[in-house]
Length: 424
Image (cartoon, rainbow, N blue to C red; front, side, top):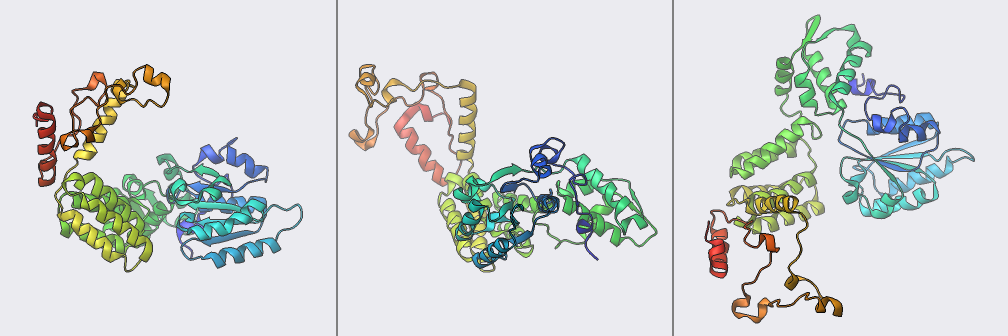
């Protein structure tokens, strides 16, 4: 028997839940589908919001051959094979066959390059699905040939509608006496993911042996806690565990940090996702207390890109323990936030004349660059002069924190600037 999420997969736009901004009455994508004329596009959104379903509905509506590739398991040869099959299935006056690529962000540059010609010539209509920002993960030539549509997490009312549809229309669930007494826990654990929500519903219903199933928040929490390894790398637990991981590093607990890392590794989390979060943590939480942390985190990310699983667990573990055991400082993080707030409050203050660029004679006549003192011409490569706008010339933004590395920076600033840095 198919899983509940698959049994309930919508077949038409009228059955499709959510994404009204794209497929509601009069919306852009609905108009294209109803006119049976679509161009290549990429669907960007979180898991379980209907990207794959929407692609299948389009294929059914257009009555055109539909090919599916997973970026996780397919290579360049698979792409070329599908394109050749698409060519042979292309008939006069018929829409181009649709090539749906799930997780297109995981395609390498060469794999994406192999699609360009077919998309450009109309051999296939490409529909890509991605959970990652296409600007970073899809090559520019391919991105420029596709429309980009952003899908949103399903809202509470969408999820409640889905639950009611499941218990009233599913061939198995409608035979059971199911009461949705409480839904808060189900909605929270699903994180706006329809597939996750239906998986939770199915798990809870199957775990109850009585003739009536009364679903409460307590029951849902108990059933999910009994399946600790049922790690959903796209759902609520995904965000809870990465949160625990980062907070353990920030709290300097290497044992907890490595435990949460193991939970993600065992659950099949994307190693690049973990590595990216380590880079962020190195900059945000360790910062100037140990600048080498950012170098190590970046080296870990590069290594992960080269080796993948299972060996990737080793550099991830190394970086995790190094970051967790490093001294901590968020002074750079606090400084940029304070500076941004200052800019919003004070607006576009003029650059002092002596700091302005003077590429033309007129600018020089207007005093641009006058009296600028070149630091390298002075002892110790330093000379006191004003660098902030006039209205902010005494403003302090960066404040050193209590660690050995920043203590040295702080002492140097006091020696150079005197009173300005003596308030700490």
